[in-house]
Figure (cartoon, rainbow, N blue to C red):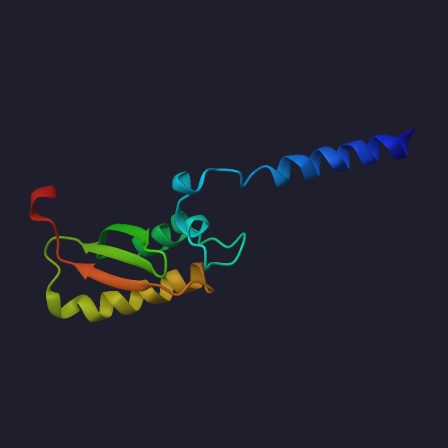
Length: 117
């Protein structure tokens, strides 16, 4: 009896997990939308963004997946000089790579948005 219940639970679990990727292709986002990507591969977007925000000079961070590359946009705080961008880039790369070591990304640094101060 217990063995039959175990099989029922196992089959039910497999049925649920097998139906998770049934979204229509036009509704898929990120790596699910890329036909050349590996199955069940993703990038931890929130983890990478939070890691970038731990750098003191970072005001805002956002990510985008283009189908081939992960692009991270970093917006620095007002008052940060452009000559310091290289240091900020190195700090952000180090923090994000520690948080998600298997996800290569392209990093763009943008000046502060003066209207959002």
